[in-house]
Length: 176
Image (tube, one colour):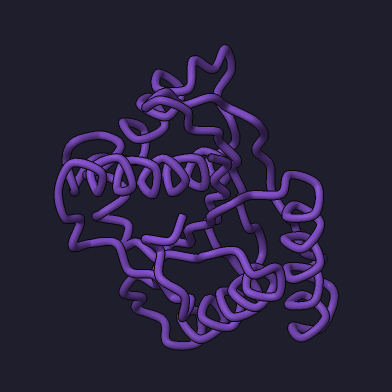
């Protein structure tokens, strides 16, 4: 199964693609969608939408996951992040790809075994789990961690109930 993980941002959105077969993870691709900060915010949202749309067309994921909004001290930043997530969710849903959301704590727990893990710990575990020779950018590593989080939840679902899996799509995630 091919999984797309997305780390939303209004300036830089990370993406990571992994294949999961027989409980093994295989790195496929990762990168970022950078927006032109000189453009209007609506134009940047279109850049995010188009970038994620291109990633979906190129890699054809069967499932996707996006990080849920975290608490932000700056309300304006939180609103912009929410709008970026909206562009991402719309791009994914236009391709009828089942989409799940995870909090940063859930991602850290799934990848590093500790919900309060430091960013460096998560990046190290992503690199180790996927056997990467080089460190991906911070945003791409976060996106790969989100993809691995979904993969781990799907794996645990085969053995027991996974209460943290929250599909957005109306069709059941169990149909996969």
